[in-house]
Amino acid sequence: IVLLAHHQHAFPILQRARERNFQPDTIWVGTHSWTDRFFGDSTQWMPDIPGYIGIAQYRNRNSEYQDFLQRIQAKQRQLRPLTPVMEFLPDYAAETMVDSILSLAKALSSLQPKDRAETGHIVNALKNITFSGVSGPVSFTAEGDRANPQYMVMNFPTNKATEWVNVGVAGITPDTVDIDIRAICWASVGCNQATAPTDTYPVPPNAVPLWGTLLIVVISILFIIIALKYWRSRQKKTRLKANIDEMQKKINAMQNIDNELYDLDQQVEKAKRKQASLLLKRADLQEIPSTWTEVEDALVEVNPHDEEYWDIHDKLRESMGTAWISKLWRVQNMSLWTYYSFHKDRLTRNGINHNERLVWHGTSSLDPSIIYNDQQDGFMMQFSNKGLWGRGIYFADESVYSDKYSYKPPTSDMPLTAGRCEGEEDEREMFLAKLLVGNMIFIDRDESPEKASECRKLTVPPTDASTGLKYNTVRGETSGSQVWIVYENGRAYPDYVVRYYKGRRDINRTLYKTRNEATRSKKRKQKSSSPKSSPKSSSHKSDPIVDVEQGLSS
Image 1 (cartoon, helix red, strand yellow):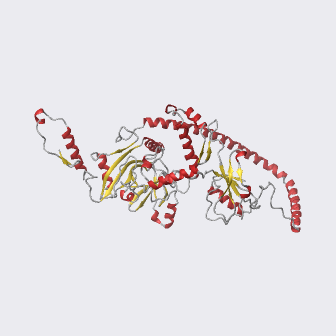
Image 2 (image 1 turned 60 degrees about the vertical axis):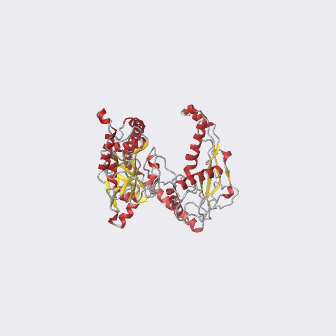
Image 3 (image 1 turned 90 degrees about the vertical axis):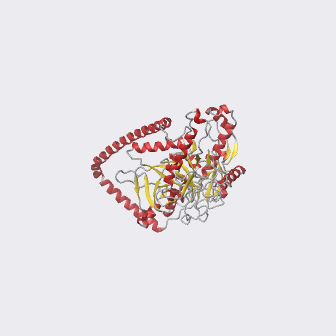
């Protein structure tokens, strides 16, 4: 039996089949969605020889695989020295990420620079690519598809095993199949078989006992009696025909509705394609923040003379009175801004107040550049861990709360991050982000232990009973701060990267103590750089003016 299901569904199905005494010699065949995957805490519910067999993504364990894995491990140790490195490549990484990117890189490197933007040249170059990759031999057909991809054939031998066993390799043609039949354990038949089982039952049927024969006779008599009653009931069935005809009319009506729904599905699909096209046009027409410079994709340092700098400085110190900004960068990422603006307009179109807020977010050990340099999502659920309100992206009103999850920037002894200078030992970084709260619900997890347990299991917001739609955001309170949790990408934009320290102000890092001090310095600079009022006045030296920014006399 071929079982097509994800692993979280496949193994409960297999366990149910075992509990209901499903035919024990069944050979269950699976795809990579559950073959060679985790199946729970116990295997005791399985038959002694389960006989599960299937295919999994091929991973070439030769020098190419090891070389690529070692380079990834070295990069991980460099960027996150305190975090364990991956011991093997994820399933999707071998073919989807590594060999696909490597194939494209080899094709592009074989072309002249002027031909690298032409799709036809790239496809022709791919046809000639051949190499041994992480996912096996890599080559392409004349149509540009992968030529004869390989898969591992996996078998789960006994219920005492702790992992699947690789019994061979198979491609998409008969001449690429290489399987060790003796290495496979077959349900009911056993292991170390020279040939695969036939379609006949390997377990011989038991002889029918005497009581079984009598039971068959009794059942036959009952069948005859039931047949006679059935013949007598034909008149009653005639009366039921009218009801059946009425039911048929309802079925025909439902079929007509199904046809209309199918037509609507086609219209929706067409509308989605049009929506994608309009989004591209929208990106060219939408407004960008007034504070942005002409460079759209950049990390721009904000000058301490700017009001923008002191607005964020004041917000940082609302809950951290001893904090001082040492560096402030504005994130100008047009792709992320377009994605964020789309979600903002979507809420408005649905009649929901987007309720935009400025909130704090700490990235812990994750370098902020991974978020602000991304061209698709920015803040991603993929980087989220399970918290007090489940697995989501957490933001806080109070900077002191996000300070606990702040990122420590690299110092002079560590590699620098592109776009930002090295940091001091006492410095930390976090995001000040724009968040579309939308329709939100407050959940008090301290209400009871049951409510706290319910909160930790959240993966999406609860449903709003008044609308029948899910809330956009969950709000909670913890450690003296309001927190906001969203469970989807695109609803927050990384507006600023704030580098700060706590304690006494260091004039080498924070030039001005107050907004007024910065404003006075800016005016003095403008006055000293303005043209003189007359030739006579220009012939005399100006009075010495102390420049707070430079700490010198001019």
